[in-house]
Length: 560
Image 1 (cartoon, one colour):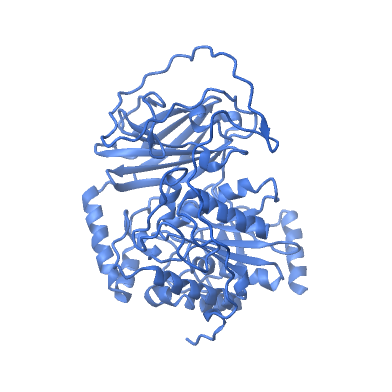
Image 2: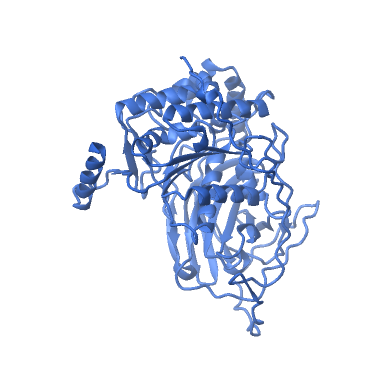
């Protein structure tokens, strides 16, 4: 009761405008709130929100934790490599089951029961690849370590679910609809770990798809894995958490201040992730601060597809390894010597090409989207820019919407694809630029006339990433976009030979007048279906849900 009175008094102070300008706002819980924590790997629930979970439980706020992967890879290794890190082959499904038991023990330490925990079991380090490539009839992703193409864990929510985008969305949607959260903790979209970024993207779509059934929850985006954050790399429980310096601008942070006993219990929970704490204790303990921070990148509004926005790229820490962290980890585990060698070889291959994005501009005229990327140094062959544009429209399954990837150099369009199918020449238009700028114009029609668009971009030298920018959501809600009955350009089957390189496309002439569109097809369930047959979907393999046993290692005492 005393804590509740304190929260109400603090809320009154905030409403009176007494909180310092520019400071992180306090995160308050109470009443009929419900907290859902989406964790990419076992231990992320504790690192990101171990204190928040304890606070919610102390206020009798229902809490559920959902683990995206079993952590059957080493997610920290991705902070030091550009490609899949070279690891010893001993990391297999048995490691995933071990980390599942550790996650149950950690959640029990935080005050949860085994019934408050859900495991999805998707492939560690492979979920962003699924987001980018594995939708519709594209075969499921195959894990490079477990060799599985479907969830292999019997205690997962849906064992046997394919490593495919639709199955991930189905599982996340089921978790969200079943629990109906008022607050949801998700990874930060700029996180340097691929599974963190992927879970954020899938979660946003799942929330949109549930918006007709549930009130929109507050999104708490938690920063976790960055190559040079948190600082210092030390256990400092009396020091408040500070946001990454390269994310501070334009982000409205909220803060959960922890009591000393909550910090101590957070450490106890982190120790229960024994396989991780054993080899990375110094790094993991640097997350034990007197506060936890949450702050999302805001959506970019272009009502009706018209307007413009300029985004500066300030994260210069990508792919720049923390030498002190490297040394600390290499002393605790021999595999870090191999990862250090891989990192050095990748850096040598790129010969200093790093952190090249300077800014990007986004604009629309109601029918076309123009994207311009500016770089700090000239983009020289064989480097190329890959731009991905994924549209969302209510009433259309997200998997059915176009998943467009455009690959460009400074002077030509190299390819345009919808997943694994090549689109014909002229589908998009490259705008002539300079050696430090690449611009492209895309019709909204090619994206399925969406209401929202995910925009991501990566600069690469062949298969080796040089730099990337966080995915951003473009919100086109407002004046409705013109719908057209003319379908997007027909995709051509992917050939074994590379696509011919197209010459720069000049300014297109205004389109000729089109005949009136045919009448819409009959409504189904109150919705008018888009013209044309829906793309074929790979069947979902879904075995009956199995409950988590009550007696697990989580209920056994652990002595440290």
